[in-house]
Length: 149
Image (cartoon, rainbow, N blue to C red):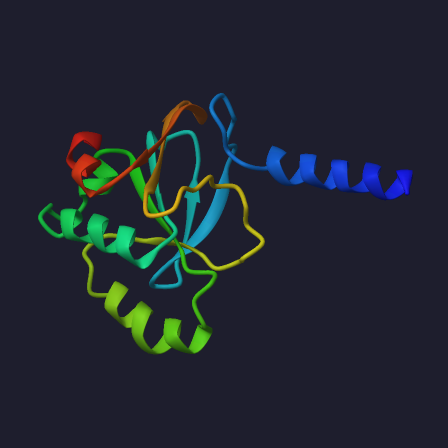
């Protein structure tokens, strides 16, 4: 019994210690975009905007649609969308073709075991970074998006 409790405690610690929190160093990691091109997220990035739901992604897409091509790059920002819960057939037939019409890259989380990013229901998670260190984590709604930049 004690072994089970210790195992669960270690598992929970490992699970939550892998999340990016304030003062975390994100290091360097790769994600693939909607064109199946790999992108490296590293200390050059100043803002990571992460969406876990269709609605919050749509809110950010609406905002970015009003900006010129290269807006995210010019602001040292990346848009990351968690599509891991989406059935692969839906992803291939509907989601990716729609995403390919955007004039910016969307980095995709496709592994449902990827727990690096914190989330709150119906909100975007925004990480502000300085030299790869998380200086703040915010949860925002549509109304807050313009104030990010």
